[in-house]
Length: 512
Ligand code: GAP
Image (cartoon, rainbow, N blue to C red):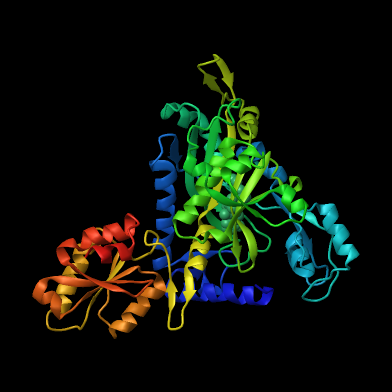
C-alpha cells in the first residue's frame, strides 16, 4: 500500500475503534496524550479475550509453564544488571531551529524510503550529511544523532535523589529473572520449564506512531523458557504436526541476498540450520500457529531473523513474527535466544546464587533461555482488528474469530410487543450466564444485524412469532448471513460448539 493510503487506512481504523468503543485516544478532552490509548467497553473485552487465549494456551494447558504477576515500578539495580540503563536506547536527532525531535532511524526511513534496521549512530550521521537532510517542518539544520534511553525514570519515597531512582519496567521479562529462584523452588520446577507473565511495560518512545503499533504504555505477554545449556535441541514436544507446519521464513541470509521470504516447513528450516535450535523452532511455530488458529490470514505472517547488527545487547539470535500491515511488514512478536546472559548478570549484580542443581551430573548449572516468546498485547489487538476488518458491498463486518469477539451473541425480539420482547429478555438472561450477550430491541432488524456485524458479534438470535408457538429461535451467522432455526433447549449447546469447539455453521446446518 502507498504511504499516504496506508496512513489514511490506519486513521480509518483508529476512527472506527473510537466510534465503536474499542479504543480511545487517552485524555482526549485535554487534547490527547501522544503514545497513550485507553480501551473502551468493546476494546476491554477483546483485549481480555486475547490475553485469556494466550494464557490458557501457553500457561494453563501446559505442565511446564507457570505464571507470575510482578511490579511495574522496579528497583534501579534490576535495569543496571540487565544492561538497560546502558544500552536500551534509540537514536535521537533534534532540529537546531524549531527544536522538534525525531527518532533518527525512522526519520531516515521516512525521508529516503529505505529500511535502516540496526543502523549505528555513526552511519546515521553519515547518511544525514550525505543527503543534506533537514527538518521537515522548518528546514532547519539537524543535530548529530545521540543515544536516548527509553526508560521512564521516577523516584520512590519522599526524597528525590540518586538513591531513590526507580524505573517503570520497559519489558516484563526481567521480573521473571529476578524471581527465578523463588518461582523454581515454590513450584518445584525441573528443567526444562518456563515462567510467564502478562502485564504493562513502559517505553518513552521518541516518536510513537501508527495507532496501537508504537505506544508509550502497552502490555506484553512473555515467557522465559529455561533449558539445560547442553540440551538446546532436546525438545520432547516437537511432533509431526509441528514439524510439518509451514511458515513464511525470512532468514538473515535471505535478507542480505535481497531475496523474498520463502514458505518452508519447520522440519526443513531446522535441517538446513536456518533455525538453529529445536527449542527455538518449537516456540516460533507455537506462537505463529496461535495467530493462525485465531483466524489471522497466514499469508500475512512471516518469521524474520534479526541481522547481526540489529540484535539487542542480550540476544544471541532473534526471530520476529511479522505481520504485513498497510504500512509494511512489521514486528508483532520478538523471540530472542537470551542465553544465560540475564541470570549471570543478576548473579553478578546481586551476589545471589541463581543456579540450578542438575541431579544427573550433580553439578550446578546456569539455566539457558533458549527462547523468549515476547508478544505485545496491543500489537496482537491491532492485527486481529485489521485482519478482521472487511468492507463488503453493503456493510462493514469485523470477522473476528468467535473466541475473540467482545459479544458472542446478540438477542433481538423481531418486534417490541406481543410478548416477543419478554421472551427475548428471558433468553438473553439465560445466555448471559455462559456467553457475553447483547440485548437490542431498537430499530429495524436489518439495522440491528448491521450494528452487530460491525463490532464482530458472530451470532444473532432472533425471537419471532414462531418462538411463542414451538419454542424455537433463529441463529444468524455473521459472515455468511445464513440462518438456522433451533430449539431453545439446544441453543446453548449449539452456540458452545460454534464458538468454542470450532464447529462450522454449515456443519450444524447440515445436521438439523
Ligand atoms: N523482552 C523482550 C522484549 O521486550 P521487544 O522486541 O522489545 O522485546 C517485544 O518487545 C514485543 O513487545 C514486540 O514484539 C511488540 O509486540 C511489543 N512492543 C514493544 N514495544 C512496543 C511499543 N512501543 N508499543 C506497543 N508494543 C510494543
